[in-house]
Length: 503
Picture 1 (cartoon, rainbow, N blue to C red):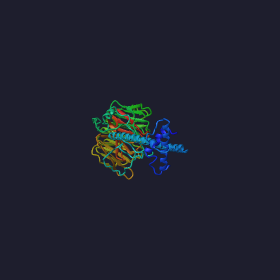
Picture 2: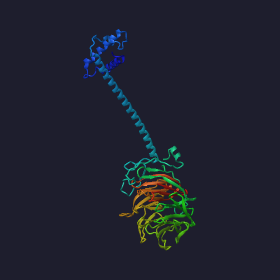
Picture 3: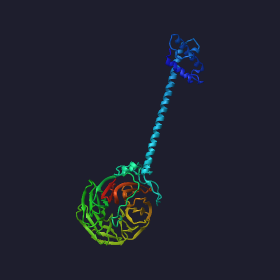
Picture 4: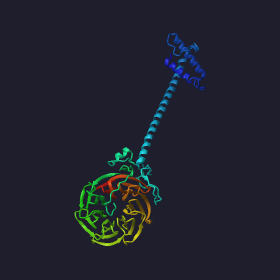
């Protein structure tokens, strides 16, 4: 006997055409009619027994009083087939429902991602593709570059990376996030710190494979403005100095002061280590250059006098530790012999900063007014006069290999090619878009990345693609930058009385 549920299932299939609509069904039209007759007959018999007639009028019109032995088998087969079809339909409906849910979830995630990208673009943050090409993480600069290369040079060991979200923000960054707006002249060292409304991002930029740049530590280095800093070549010491009229040596192992150099009578303008890290020299407004023993900095080894103006900068020759170069506010450059304790040569051409070419020491870069002069160290001949700046140049620096010189004025940064085949041409240029530039250093590990010190912030300039990113850093002008090839760290010295370490 068929249960009422089985009978109802057969009738539903009939109504939907499952038994009669397909011309090539397993049982054919004849079999369908036969099933209807058998079902009607069974229900008619059931009705005589006083049971409820589940099929209504259909049993009255059905027809045949004959029952064959195979009837139960046929009906059971058909019911099994119908149940299987019903299960398949239910499974299809479930699959469709899951697909709709997944599609809705995907749309929601796309909307969230799109919103995040819009927020990141507003803040000047996005990503670096895994192939290593820069996207919107760095602002594109409209300045023309002398370099024909447009491929990315700043990359990890395998050329890939990704940009992380900002971390360790300044105290007022939360307010910027909430309202959606996150988005010294060397001659005096006393100029006012001009504020700037330039959009900034978080102070940590992290490229997951190979490159990262974030604040490592902050040293309260002085009770007054800090205007210069330098790492020892072995990376074990950091020297900082400024308006306090003394230089301080810091152990990089524990970031504690090792000693202080306190014989200058006016503010210190520059500090540099010798190539073997055993000595350091300082220049000052007191018109002197002093040489110190790094292991015993309590007294000077040498004091050089002869400049007629405030000594603005100095440097050790990379291969000849007996040779020190210095310049003063009267644009006079002097060579000093540490061993002889005397000036060996002087000439005009350097006022704000002097730097020897690393490693080879063949050239000297000297900045005076808006010109950077490249001198032959041996002969004192001016080989190149780099004159693209329109305002006084505050800072110059070489890349680690000595092929390029970067020069910084308040409104622009320029990079000059002085390597093999180079003739002093300007190959990269970045113009200021609001925050005045002041200092610079090539990143110690990624030489296509120039770190620029501004008012309160650092500018990371990817020269290969001419894109830059602003990172909040200090509460005052960043007067000087230093880089350590030994440790990969960058130091920033600021008028906010601190030195910060970045890695």
